[in-house]
Amino acid sequence: MKSLPVLAPRLQIADATPDHLPAVREIYAPYVLQALCSFEEEVPGVDELRQRFEASRHDGLPWLVALDDGVVVGYAYAARYRSRAAYRGTVENSVYIRADRQSRGLGGQLLRALIERCRAAGLRQMVAVIGDSANQGSIRLHERAGFVRVGVLHAVGHKFGREVDTVLMQRALAQP
Ligand SMILES: CC(C)(COP(=O)(O)OP(=O)(O)OC[C@H]1O[C@@H](n2cnc3c(N)ncnc32)[C@H](O)[C@@H]1OP(=O)(O)O)[C@@H](O)C(=O)NCCC(=O)NCCS
Image 1 (cartoon, rainbow, N blue to C red):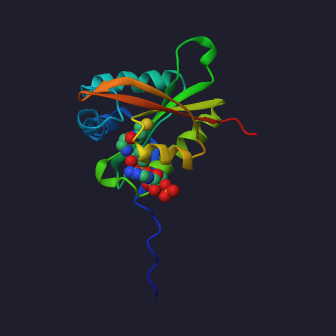
Image 2 (image 1 turned 135 degrees about the vertical axis):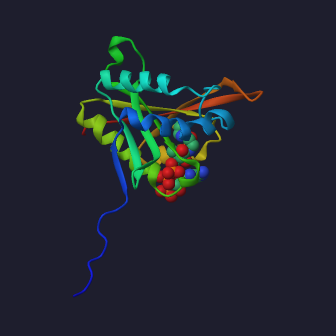
């Protein structure tokens, strides 16, 4: 009898749980400490990440993880863009892929899944606030997911002794 091909892919995208947050922190830490994509300068602790996670959940917004054989290799989440009431339909997204797993399509898969979840939740607009106008990976990722560039805020950050821009990109979520 012929053997069956292996059908079960090791990679899956799943809802994050609090148990994933230590791994999320491990992925995020080098970007805080060494890169300009995050404007944080101190690595948040797991308790702080849990508060962010719970805040998104409280607002009905998704946190997703990419799992390779159960190991977290990337994550993405949506948070309220601004707290004032009339921004209720707009979210800001974040996507981080473990450094050794970049450029293999994971970020795109996570972002597309996040968009679908937000669309299904009835949200209207997603905004990406991309740290550093030289962050070609993130700009390309968002372009490929249907975001358009709406502007640059020049020198609004100051990290590692230099001024840093943010690139604003936006995507409508509602079905045309
Ligand atoms: C940005 C990031 C999330 C992209 O995820 P990824 O899994 O590496 O990206 P993908 O493999 O899904 O690629 C998506 C697109 O971006 C392109 N891309 C990825 N990395 C790139 C890079 N460094 N430079 C230029 N293009 C890049 C890919 O070629 C692909 O475009 P294509 O479909 O036209 O070939 C990931 O690189 C990352 O975690 N970077 C550091 C953190 C960060 O900047 N997060 C975004 C915060 S706003």
